[in-house]
Length: 200
Image (cartoon, rainbow, N blue to C red; front, top):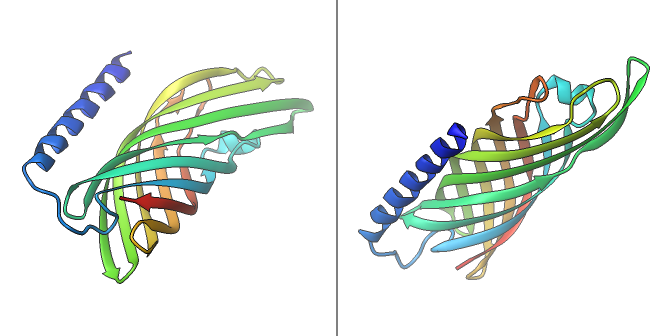
């Protein structure tokens, strides 16, 4: 509960200060990714903890939805919500262990975007996250459970803009998380894939 309160206070402080900062400056006529944008992401996600690898749930496909609003020239505030669901059947010590994991990251990010060449936009940034994990395990005495994990991430993307509002590209991210208390593991991960979006 203390972690949730601390995270909520940080979120409110960052959001309030950036909104106030943005209101002092009128929007520009042009911006690399518009005055705002949304994108659908399809990525490959790999969890770096060895215990997850031993259970066969260390990688899968990931789908995410992100949205950003410009708060200053080239600087965007936004977030991402995603979903991954690795599952497996593995043999551990002669016992069949069935594992089903749900991973849902909820992120608050700052992104800096530049236009190094016409129609190409490079973005990079960092942020904080609150990540929901639910693990259902049967066999070998491994615990099932669920938890919210505090995390942080940094990322980069390359975008190609088409016309006035469409863009697509590739993205990469590395995220660190707290330990999952029911297991001796964390859900730190890396993601790489592509996205398509609309700027406005």
